[in-house]
Length: 241
Image 1 (spheres, rainbow, N blue to C red):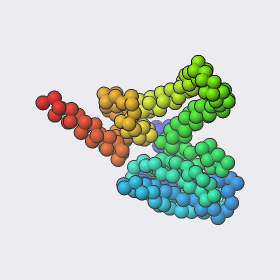
Image 2: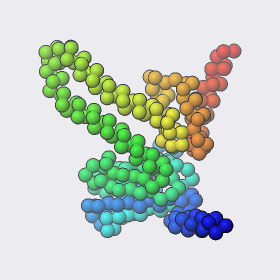
Image 3: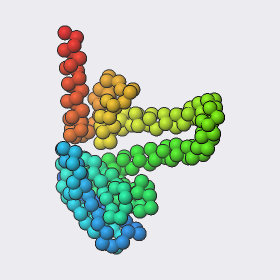
Image 4: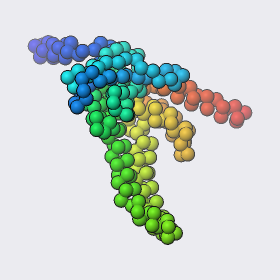
């Protein structure tokens, strides 16, 4: 009995330590090397696709905090005054951590909540593949130009084949992500883009979507995808009549 009481007390203590309530978010950022007073802008898209700023704060002591409310996961961006590229994040309930890399914005780290941990992991993997592709292109640029000038199709085909292996690695990772991560908000966004893919397979998309966690299905993109699949099924049924 004492062990149970102690366990309950520990759970209550952990819960009480949280800085946010249900439906709230707290973004805590570390911005080393960025001068105090620089503006941090949290932006999101409206239903019409218009990008708008929803909150602004200033860097103080190499840090910043943004707090607010959110109903469900959404993709937002954090823009830092003086830096060209914004940092995409999943705005959701919980404590979101950001470590800004001012020299290479794509190396900035996000985490703290499930979907931002997933997003960070996804970015780390895709960035590693992109880095390999760029390294290959840089190492073989001159060779490729010489082969093109000499109309050396053997060398050109060889280089294209080697690059396509790297490209396929990236494609496979992205294609398999929704299947392997049914609880990730990112999965429903990727699956929605599958309709534009030349490899689009309706049954495969439906199977992947049906395997999603309910929390993912119940997001706005999840409901839109469900409606789209239902509409396609209805259209196909009408054709068969």
